[in-house]
Image (cartoon, rainbow, N blue to C red; front, side, top):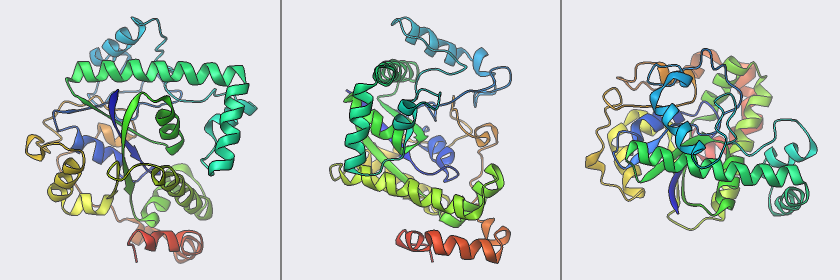
Length: 300
């Protein structure tokens, strides 16, 4: 069984920073977001700077997966648990986690619809093979998947292939909402609601996990006291903190994810630009949609 750390969070919560920091521990192997959709293989770059299709590390992963008779296409490798065709089955596979009744319906639909059943089985095999390749190539013993998506986490847990520990990453919802508005063009209400719903899904999943297998991590704590927070995370993972350098610039990375992976990581700076950028109306909308949840996480 593969030891798996899964970072679960809404987008723009600081998962890339957390991934780079945890990757400085020699026992942890990671490529960041193991789930990805369609990419432009002519331009998309690994965090090492090479084009993904030219990166020797990723070519080695591809070769090791394909040695097992599986397909690993850089344009869209079947590592995510969906069909990408907006069919009824696809909608069931990617739908938000809504609780026991819906999950029973989802399981029935996936078991009944042949395309869903085949895709789930194939994704499970490719993820397992890719995980083994990453661990081998990076000489780690614990895989870190920073895909964030709670639905992917649910599917990964159902495979039975992983001993899962979850890092539930939280950032002030106003900061996430501000980034979502800027980068995705969503309106404040939709952005705030997405933040709330993603955290609710994560809480539903972790509520069914054993004590000691999930932990909340706050982005602000990670930025303000990086050493102490990382030591606490490593202790939770049962790892010797002193073996982690926390020197992100000096650690080789082959990480997929947002554009931050290509930027200099020599300094950690807390991003609270939302304080200047969110107008009063947006703040009122956020408060009506997500204020209670935000305060539950300690943000006033």
